[in-house]
Image (tube, rainbow, N blue to C red; front, top):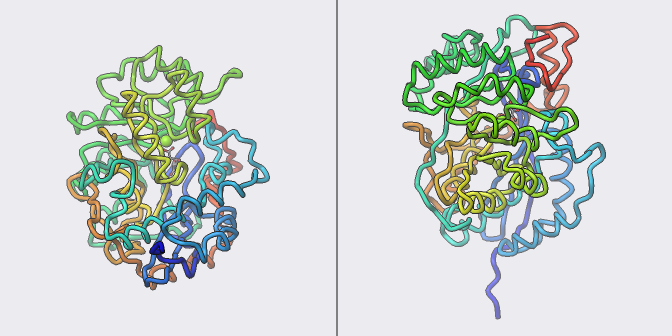
Length: 447
Ligand code: GKR
Ligand code: MG
């Protein structure tokens, strides 16, 4: 007679919201709030498993529709549970399969796979049942007890130019918390941002979110950062805003400054980003990273065949925890590099990143995380810390963290107070440039 693993007795999907700064990107300006969906599973041994994924109605509806496929199932059969969800998957209305190679934010929901929040929660339960941390259940098991993360720098607009309810932290006793809510657009202000982050979290490596000003201006910021951090690895991500010729011109002489460039150009002249980025690499020999042109295995096949990228930022919210690590193993075997992309998130995702990166074979590149922009709005009682530029990997069974239900319900109330739940970066941008419309080829302040 087989000993059964615990049975899932309940699954809750709780949409939540948190506060954000007016960070700018190619897609516009971040709104005052960002949204996420939290999955909470209970099993009949008394354990709770949790997962977090992107917000918005579509992802929330997908998750809710999966509840009957999860409740009543055995935790040990988590792969079959996820397999059933996949087999039942149908093509969502509006999904043209284009993915996010032009950073069209309305398509992000099709690249994000809601069920990975369930995978995370199931692994949390299984880890607790077996008495091991989640990273021990993944890939080749735990490779490291802390994972490197980078300081994610953003140009931030003046929220005073809007009538939107952005959070104000000017009275905070924490210098980073005070800084992150104010305008930062000059080279000096971005260097100050990086110095403040180094002071608080110990970062040595940084990524600048580009696609805001002209490419020349943003490269000036990059040069200023390198001057301040001569030993730091400095990257830029314009989200494909530059044309191929422009990207080559901007990057050709930056090989000694940029450790990699992320999605420098996008589709043009009938060629996909995979083809265009291969041409960029041939012309500049600068390592190229992506979270836009390889977001599923079919896209990755073409990117690999064309040698379009050196670094795949395989976000577990796009690829799944196990899928992201399949990618890590493959890249490592091929002499390429794994990392992870991020969007705004709470600390459950932060913990997920820690476990996935802890299990990644080889030498991952420092992970992206937006969490520093949300630090302090935690949904956990024991958020993993970032110190000396490294995120700690919890060493307790499962994810090794404890949900703070009061905070979750507070974030849920904030969510329900919002008129819209889908990300819309054009709305805040229109306060800066009346009638502003997204253009995948124009930095957001260049109109
Ligand atoms: O948070 O606005 C943002 C980012 O620009 C995000 O939308 C991107 O998906 O950070 C991401 C990236 O690396 O492309
Ligand atoms: Mg990117």
